[in-house]
Amino acid sequence: MSLDLSAHLGQPAFVVPSPGEEAHALIGWIVLAGLSLMVLLAALIGLAWLVVWRLGFGSAVPSAFDP
Image 1 (cartoon, rainbow, N blue to C red):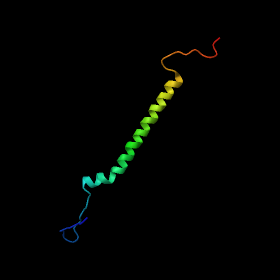
Image 2: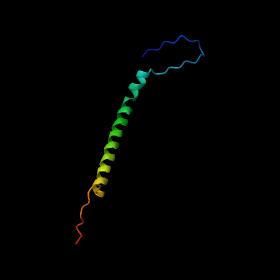
Image 3: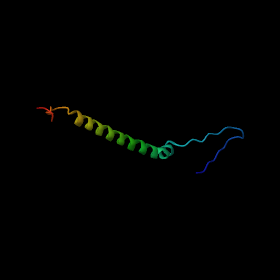
Image 4: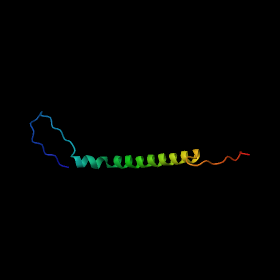
């Protein structure tokens, strides 16, 4: 990376990354956030399936203790 400034001494100069450089620097965090979101959704779907299975929504099942 080369930087060429034509400014007078004592004058402030700001160097900011371009949007492409910024996105490239953040791509790892973006991928990590996406994977975390998929894991969270899988856990919620599994939890919902477990609750439906455990509570038995939809059909009545006779108890093993009914005479």
